[in-house]
Length: 349
Image 1: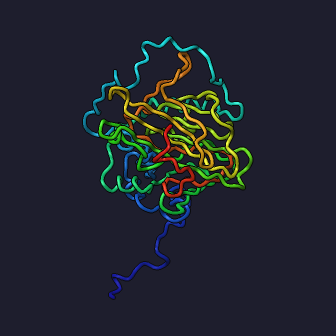
Image 2: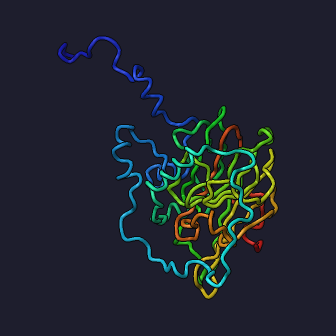
């Protein structure tokens, strides 16, 4: 090779000197998720996609949080929920708590969550392509953690994810893709019921208080808040067994606290309303393969405290949402063949 084309002396330039950049943008530990990880990472519904920080600040609202193109879906909102106009007004107080009897986030965090929801309204569903529909049918669901998550999320098989927090982890909401429900699957005269469900196996060596929230959210949702606390979300919290529906206070009594070794499941049963109008929604909870309790989304509500139900009524995508904090070790199961509860297709609510 002529002298003019010899490489310069010394080692080639590398990124070793840019350790901070490497740390900031390194991929998460463990093998890459299977199935739809590539598809999902480019999907606008994944709120945790890793972008360059310089680009993220400029493009976050335009690209990551912009609503999809096209007109919004048309729904007859006047008949979307059961007619309650003839019922007496609900009481001001009944079974809700002002604060959780176990753990409470700070008022500042609550305010930040509310501000986030105002800034980023609910998405309109873009539907699922054929590949995503096939993944959903077999339970090949991906579980995403935000970059700030203090812990690990590891794929343990099709539709199975192991989650473990490290140290004293802050409140974090893990999100799924594909969503377990889309409005295209809404109950109709030809198919009057749609049911979604998943389970979580709590490790036997988990500490006695289980710092887990089992829920659903309509995307997007603030990743630094537990499901059930803000609009478009509901959850059952394992530390005290309370249920939350768009409730940033103390929730309502529902079941006993989760325990190490428990397998807990949460589902939503959506059925066509009376006369073919609207969608009825029942949320149900299982423990160790047995249906334990349920509630009607439209049950008697507190006229002073309860927030609107937007996002949960069957007209938005619904993703499984697993909230974790402090120290918790679990396995999330979306594959139907691995569920302990056997009544998904047969048990009436």
